[in-house]
Length: 498
Image (cartoon, rainbow, N blue to C red; front, top):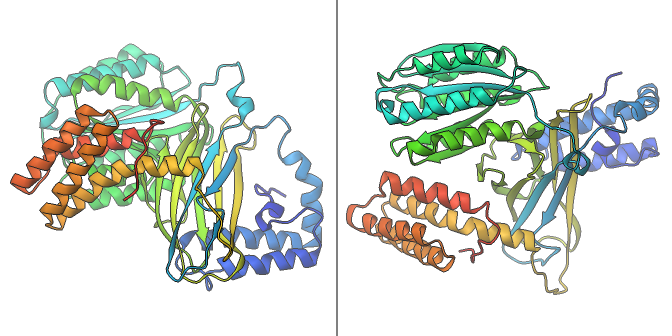
């Protein structure tokens, strides 16, 4: 019997639990997570499938006995694991007459034994580069991309897989997926790239995915990097849907926007769908560094294909999710599984969830949400690993001074600057120029207070730009958006939430 989950952990019971205990645990879960009871949260239905599988196994005496006899050998003692920790913004709730906001900080940490291990820990990479070679890339931009690709080839080893696709209004595979052997020949093919035509990304993505699939394997870090400097025409929706359709395969797409003339919303959607991230490259001279940093991080992965799943109780509303580390960016909450990329040896994954608790909660302890983290630990024989946190809280009318944990306060403080510029952009979209200007001026003030003088001047300049033209500049929009995101990675950004 091949079982890759712990049925006792799924039901939150001890291995000595009786059949009555198993039934009681299943009924409790059903009241919260059954699709008929919890229709608004996609994660609930998915988690209930796992709970049902655990219940059916444990209620079958023969299967349970077989599982118990094998459980000790399913995971070797030397196998690694990751730690999944969830922190609530409040320890208790008051029974208020209006809805309340609560935050959950979900953090995934690599096994400390692996982090401290002295042996070399490089992961094998299955890398596909999808490179824009439309007419706007002509000149220094394309030359810098070529130089970056040459350096990447030099740093890959013969066990790594590389493929390269180039696109304009058509796509061409110039390096078929294969182990990196003849580096000089590979670099020669890159050097022959020329720029012409318009920008249509969909066919480039289709070819890139086909190449990556050729060596797609659980022991590899399967990654596509898209580099573009322009808008894609007529295939935005198809491209995003394609990315969403491959998320379950374990292929991650990261995107790099070069210059100012590219669609930041589109590239964010494309990357977020698979657990990747978007990088803003404001100068061709920084292309080489950014691409090399990206590939270096791929070789430092402890666990790949990390997914979070959150199932709030039926009466609780999930409002948003934001990945704080690594590579901060908003996450989609529309799907049951939320891809968050790879877990590196030297960096944890950190996600902040915002919940709305209904008015007038009943006095006593109540459940909030059940969260799971799953991923493939690359060095383990049995790679798949999962961890569960089932969060609850006490509702009491006895007032207690309840200061949110420092980690939550820090996370909220870091988000404030990013939200300021996003709300300014939303105000412009809604035609409220006065409000947009006010928000940008407030952002400039906060940035000056934090010592971010150059970025503060950019915010002030954009406030004036909006006041006179009713729009942000392309450069200003991207600089404020992606630099305030970058500040989320620094430890000392604090601000009052609006």
